[in-house]
Length: 121
Image (cartoon, rainbow, N blue to C red; front, top):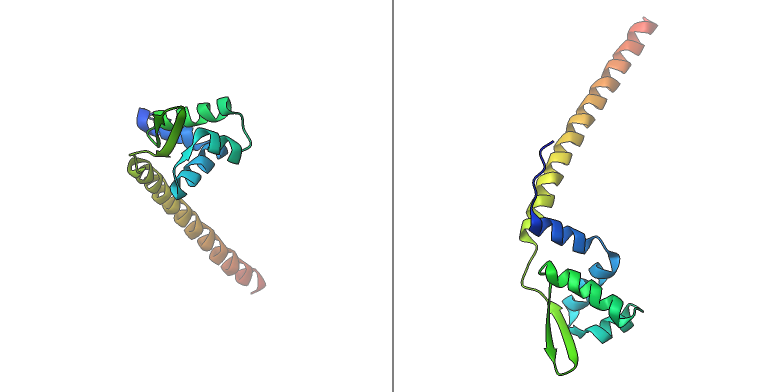
């Protein structure tokens, strides 16, 4: 199997693999928030939330800006188009495989019906 190493995809899927980080993205989809607000919302320490935000920021999914002592987070510039294309390509591949499997199962059912009729005759 050929491995296609795409750092951008790797970073995105690694960032999205965690439920907390997906939750942070969902929250930021509604409104910008400080790291403190996010930590409170997810019942985490500031240090823990900073680490999650850092992973999202490295993937380009979140952008932060520091104003005074407050670091505010917002959705980043990336719109996941490359990730969506990768998922769609693999969805189509699996859909085609399942369609082929459905066809084989249907053919086997038809053959089984015919064999059952022939046995009774």
